[in-house]
Image (tube, rainbow, N blue to C red; front, side, top):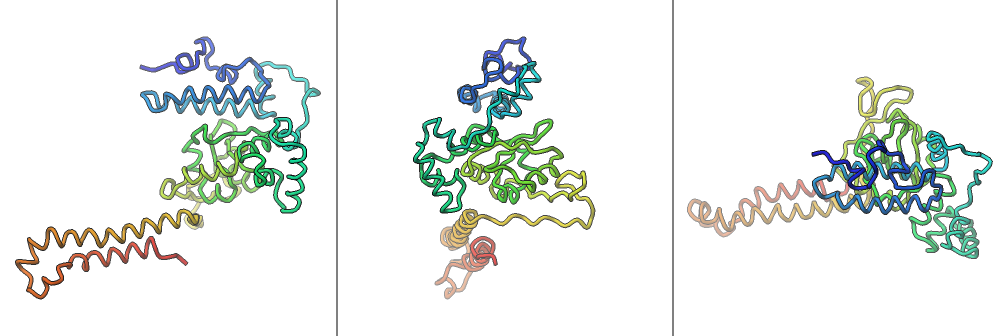
Length: 343
């Protein structure tokens, strides 16, 4: 039996279908307090996650993504204005406040002091780091707080990647070599744009890459670089996704489809150092089992059934024929494919 998740889980009356973003997040219409919006989203996210492992796991994930999209819209200054206007809100543009530097935002939040803000700027000048990275390196705030302040400076939405699950359709079209190069993660494919979590403002190269692969413009949201790297490691692990060919610029072909027989293929992204180490570790385990399994077979099966009864006595002094015939070739194969460093 179908369940009305809006009514049963969120308490939204049946006459509010489909619910708008404010109704979905249980907010007062046209709420402007960004912190309150995030607070309500976090509370509802936690509540809906309780149903993620039960009978309605698919419905739970769909609703979690709806909540995330609503929060991302209402915490983006420009998108919120457009959305509010679509709901009939009259906005006086003269009341719009200018963007503040992230250090001012952090001071207002009492996350750093004015002296720490000055020290962070001086440290950034000395080292060539951005203000955001300087503040994190000095351990004044953590990565997530710095990313949220940076999003505020840019007028972008901030997203905590621990709160949502990216759509596979989005990740399948943006390959690992692209997300690693630009330190980004595709989240959702919307009707008019692709939502992509970025550690920095996207450059024209990433904008073009997204437009060519999805035939939609990018809508960037800000996440910490650390959380993006962790999400890439989780969602782009070796073997999880096939590398798709880059579409030819100036064409309307979907990524992954060949435009002609002569179209060059994009090289598969190189493994990271962590992935190489994991591969090498697995190879050494496989090599050990390549010897261990034949040795056990020789000692406990073939010795009584074959070697002792049919082989000459001098051969019986070395009852490890399977270990030599099978184990050595297998070990060499695993050494070549997993352990040996590729040049």
